[in-house]
Structure formats: structure tokens, C-alpha cells
Length: 483
Image 1 (cartoon, rainbow, N blue to C red):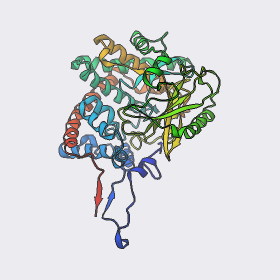
Image 2 (image 1 turned 90 degrees about the horizontal axis):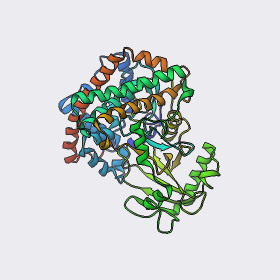
Image 3 (image 1 turned 135 degrees about the horizontal axis):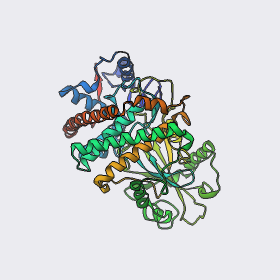
Image 4 (image 1 turned 45 degrees about the vertical axis):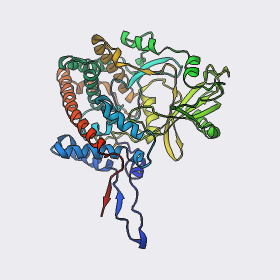
């Protein structure tokens, strides 16, 4: 099991736990910040694998469940709450607006209900946060737009079924909230997602990982080609419309961007680290890899709202502000699945390194700027922003295209998982084992549907608890233990 945070010496554990301070006279303080419960849940995961009659959070109800929801959300945001981080209040408000935002922003709450589950299932490098909007268009190593999984913040080695359960719940929820579909249609959409996954895994089982080719504008399903068409934008127009100041020498200043040009030399050092670690060439489209400007980026994301994020502007090869590159540095956090997945023999690494490992495994010849650096003593992941980086607008999907899109996402997830034994740490062929674990397929699909329906019912009640607590100031401060 990966130990990238929350355990002994882990980043999240340090951030969430402050040692007892000394009061006057040398006596202990009457209070201390409550510690992270990652290790407690790791023990619960192990206990459940050995003794499935252990009660887990999903079995709680009433006020006990309400307190669990409150404590988990506070723990997940402890650093942001204590530091009064910009964007933390914005995230809490966003979670209250609608159920899908709540689902997207509370991955830890969702996965704690699964603690220790599916111990017998084949292990892969799971994405950790699968839902309809975490697939999209992004650049590959050749700067060609591809479609696939696009959020690696929660990657960790665990049962393949965890991604399918999260994805099934996400599709069922989104098709209800955004698509307005009835129960029968929602079930069909989830079934298409799981069947697409099985279809992709069957193909790779027969033809091998070497046949993996990402979905591009020329080989993708029609519903994905429309997303490619929507994502087309010239780099020059993208830069000047959204980012560059009046002379093109740096970032503009607005409510989204705050230039911090005094840190140019510092961020040049981070870019140099990426160049060395990834073996980047200073020729071609990357230009000289010279940093032109740096800014702070505000208000982006859902789960990551309130975490520091920087944009770094690199001089393009033309040196005329038409083909500059933007590299993003985003604060890395511990995987929401840390300490929850059943114990296994694989370690994806710590924080930013874990996220970079996820990208390198899940995407063949993916973004060359994916990596990890340390900024202000904290781990950050890096990646390129691009004019065609985009995800689906669920409101644009017709009734038929919902099922087609779900199938395409199932295929993309199968591609990512199939690389766990090729680019990942698995030393055996994973595809046949996954297909065997999904047999009989109709029963497996029905299990995924039933899981999603129960998870959605629980989520709806959790959201009621959350909104009630938010109004009463439950998330203004972290919890303390008093003696």
C-alpha cells in the first residue's frame, strides 16, 4: 500500500496534526488538534479484509452518520481551514449548490464507505476519482490532442472495481441531475459504461498492451469527435484572449490571475528540474524553456479549490507571443484512497511523484511536462495547459449520446488499467484476471448498478447533513480534543 501521506512521517498527517504545545508553567495545553484518521482507516481496511462483519461508515445512520460526514469533510480540509486558504470557503459553498459538485468534492467521504472492500479483486493502478467529467481532451507528447482519463490526483494501486464503482455512481448521478433521466435510462447508461470497460479489456487481453492507441480526432467515436471539434482553438487566440497582458511579455492581472514576476528565477529552477527529470529537449515547440512570467491561479477545480496553484509562462520558439507554453504547478495532496484500499505489494510513490507516476502509466506518450517539484516545502505536480485541454459539457449530450459517451469512457478507463502491467509495477498479465473477475458479466453489471443506486441514496442524505452543518458554521474551524 502506498504511503504517500497521512501515516508516520506522511505529509497529510503532519499537516493535520499539531503536537501539544506548552502553556505557562510548562504544563500541557488543554487542547490539541485532532489527528488525521488515515492510519485508523488503514487498520479498519485490514480488519474488514480479515473479518467482513466489521461495521464500516456506510452502516451508520441518523446523527451518527451526520457526525461522520462532518468530521470527514473537516479532516479532508484541515490544512485549508487552519490556514484560512483562499478558495476554501468558495469550495464549501460550491459543494452545497448541487449534488454532483458535492460528489466530486468529497471523494474521501465516498471511499471511506468502501474501506477494505473487494480484497479478492485484481489490483491495478486505479485512477481513484472516476466520473463523467474526469475524462477529456489533453495534449500528448507530440502536442496532439487525445481523449482519456485526465485527473490523476488520487491514483493508487487498488482493486480495479473501485474505479468502476466510483464511475458507475458518477454516471448515475450525472445522468439524473444533468440529463434528467429516469431510473431505467440511468441503469442503461451505467451498464454501457461497464460494458465499454469490458469491451476494452477484452480487446487488450487478445491483442496485448502494445496495441493501445489513444482516442484521437481520427479514430474516436462520434460523440468524442464532437468534443475534439469543440476544443479546437489556436494557441495565439487562446493566449491573448485569456492570459497575456497588453504587450505579451507576461500574464495579465485579474480575478483569476495574480502575476508574481519577482519569483521568475525560482520558477526557472523548477522548470530546469522538470527538463532534467523528463529529458526534455530545448528545441522544437518547447522553445528555449525560458520562463517569461509566473502567476497565481485562483478559483480553479472542485476538489482542489483552496489549494495553491501557479502558472508558468514559457517563451515559445517564435518568440513573438503566439506560441508560448503555460506550465501549471498544483499542490499535490494525499490520495483519498490512501489507507482505504486493501493492502497490496505496490507503491505508487509520494504526493507529486505518485501523480506523475499515474500519468505515465495511464497515458502512453502523454504530457511531457507531467512531474513533481517541491515549492515552499510542499509537493506540487506539474502539467501543461493547452488550448485544446477540455472536458465534456454534459448538458450538450442527447439521450442517445449519454450511452455512447459512457461506453467511450469505459473504453478509456480500460486503456488506463491495461497499462498497469506494462508501464506500471504489476509483473503479470492483468487483463485475463480482470475479465475472469467480471464473469458472469450480467451479474457484475447488476452489482455495479445496485452499488451505484445505494451510494446515490446515501449521498443524497449526506448532502442534506452537509448543507445543514454548513449553515451553522461547522467548517469554519478544525476540531480539537480537550482534556
